[in-house]
Image (tube, rainbow, N blue to C red; front, side, top):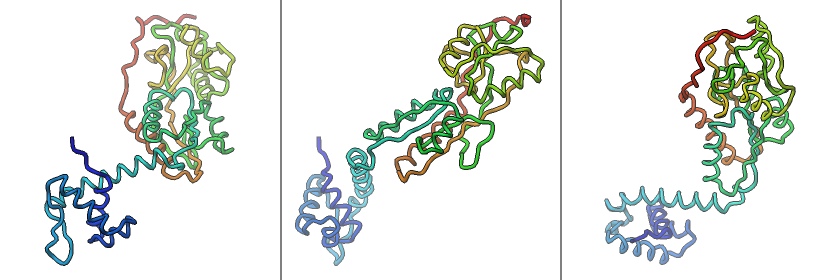
Length: 301
């Protein structure tokens, strides 16, 4: 196995870019003889002549021109890897706030990729309701937040827009009962919107739980003791979108938005923002099949 020497490649690129050994040596802080020796080593390793030295100005041979593109990429990747793995700029913490109901399925993939690119940078994931996350950003306790809301506010960016759906236990019957038992966190923004929709449809309802705990809400719904609402395709495996054939009202759509606080982190925060955009763009067209409901029955009074 033969490996190209990075110092030799760097010398080769510098000579090609600056048109001669003298200028390249100055740029690299090497002596001219050291640069010439690196070029000779590279040519001997490859068994090729990389420079045409017959003229007054050094020029690349066809083989040298072919190598130059590879050499540039290898030097750039080497420098990028060394910088990200060792530079203090890529240490520290980024606080990312996300509502609990949109953590899946996009966030785990994004966080894994970001960690691979910036292994020395910690991402602190803050999960809460949209109102609380906006307050955390305003007070400087978060760097980036995602929200779920009917409309984007000034300074925000829409990443996706999806319908709000009724959620129940897989194959459950709670959605047929009247009054309809509804479960949600007290601070959930979907709660007033869902209850207004039931009122407009003339459907009697009652609250099944009074809690701020998302786990309590999910446990109540998965036990088929109540129904809730979530953005389409964000429900966990133990819950399912209800196929109600119009027996429950439509709930409109919700936008998944992003807001950022500029702390001067530059490329690091910009990269996480870019990954979030890419993740939600890739997820827009993914629509898993809706879990089929059990045979249709009349609603129970």
